[in-house]
Image 1 (cartoon, protein in one colour):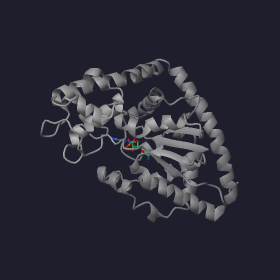
Image 2: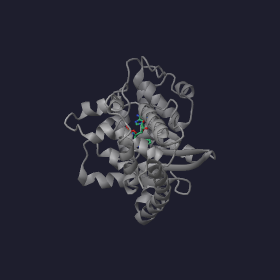
Image 3: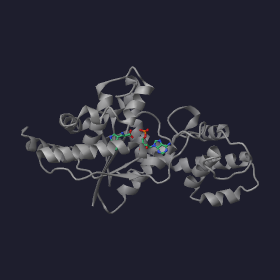
Image 4: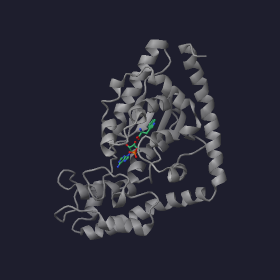
Length: 326
Ligand code: AMP
Ligand code: TRP
């Protein structure tokens, strides 16, 4: 039996990359009979380690919650929580800080990348980011963590910390495994050799209006040559669009290629836009339903957070006792 935990920073609108790279797996795992516990978090304390806007931050958190619910996180099966509402996460992070050598942290590629993006935002929290992530996972004694491949160094670190804790204070944590999304990297519409991320016309957001979707796909870059053929190396742009088509329509890439044999990029893009619009429609309707029912959403969060708190505080008590802090 598995205990699942995952989180996403509330740093912007969710896009198709998030859906296929992360949330789709969350939903699959929540529905898997092998899962005995599934907890999904909006990790606000991770989000503040990089530049953010305090005026809009609360709204971003609530937007993320609505996105998760609309994407299929089912409060009957999973707990949906805000990290900051369960202070045991940060308390365990402090404990882990005292057993984590700085040299495990300042060599991590994610730390270096974030520093490059915002060199002035060089704060201790950014260095410590993966320790808090280890605490998020281990406070619930979770053992299976659905994430993208970029998060592997953090999962390795969580295991190092768990091992060291077990060694110093007695067996407490089981090994943690990453659950990686298979072949679901969605690339930018503007620069198809980079992954789709949060800015401008490069991402198809889950909440984009039909006309915005049509416009973004129309403007998406294409490769030279007319053929609609999957070839990631030489035709990264059309390969990405084919991947998106295939994931959304459920048709194999080969089948989509056949359908568009001899047709133009313009035809393909027009149809792709409608596939995306159709895919997003039920998601957007579901989201509007939750949006107009904020009491229900508040109740889902409060109930989840109460249950999560019970697990977290019981585990933290055990951890502190082992360390003589009680
Ligand atoms: P981030 O917004 O970078 O914190 O990503 C949150 C989660 O979504 C991580 O598990 C990422 O690996 C995944 N993710 C983000 N962008 C993409 C993408 N373009 N394709 C696939 N997965 C993605
Ligand atoms: N670091 C993760 C990311 O950037 C977000 C995250 C925080 C997380 N805590 C976590 C993911 C715990 C999985 C488990 O995507």
